[in-house]
Length: 259
Ligand SMILES: Cc1cc2nc3c(=O)[nH]c(=O)nc-3n(C[C@H](O)[C@H](O)[C@H](O)COP(=O)(O)OP(=O)(O)OC[C@H]3O[C@@H](n4cnc5c(N)ncnc54)[C@H](O)[C@@H]3O)c2cc1C
Image (cartoon, rainbow, N blue to C red; front, top):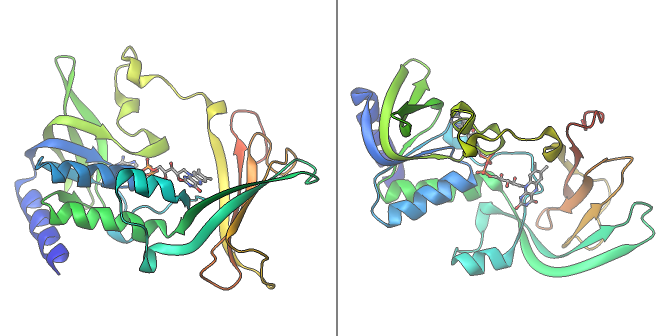
């Protein structure tokens, strides 16, 4: 309730003002942007967090959903639980191209529900005073005298408006929504080589038969199925026979679309 109330108040404030100033604007409320907004909010920094997705979809992305337990220990972040948790991981089997060699790496981790996990940090950030705008697109950075001084935002029904900030963070993942508008002579705007991009497809499926050792993830390095990448089968051990299965194919090589 506190979350909803504060969100609505924040929405109202921004939409009426249509222009404001923040210490930091974070574009992208995926796991990186949401966690950063939360960390900054703990320092009392005035933050605006925006994402084009609705709150119900933040963090959503084709992904293996696997994460090692040690990351939580190192960052002091609470382990996923409840609806954030899809499975427990005890290790991973990596298969050679002909599947004649299998290498098992043991290590504890989790299969997470990325949406619920990311929402945790958006909620915590908002509780700490961050202004969060869902369904809001960052169009481009505002540049003045060779410096980024803010961002132009757009929202359906509201049009576009400018927000000034001391710092603008591009947490838009592969889309690099801010960085790609920067002057080409700035080192940070270096173009991505298509060969450094992996094109992925994945589904979450219910298998007809139980899977052996559901707490072991599987990676198959197979150049016919996934040239330049691999295909994976990651069971959600907390549900019966549910697996996250997908493949990633290297871009820029003319390989077929993985779907
Ligand atoms: C096939 C595949 C499998 C993977 N498997 C794993 C795994 O098992 N374990 C693991 O730890 N990692 C995995 N990863 C990596 C992981 O998914 C990424 O590292 C992680 O999602 C990056 O998070 P992010 O917040 O940086 O970006 P994203 O999750 O991409 O978030 C970017 C956000 O920016 C928003 N956005 C974009 N443009 C704009 C704009 N103009 N205005 C407003 N908002 C905008 C988007 O809506 C999105 O919410 C995998 C990746 C792929 C592709």
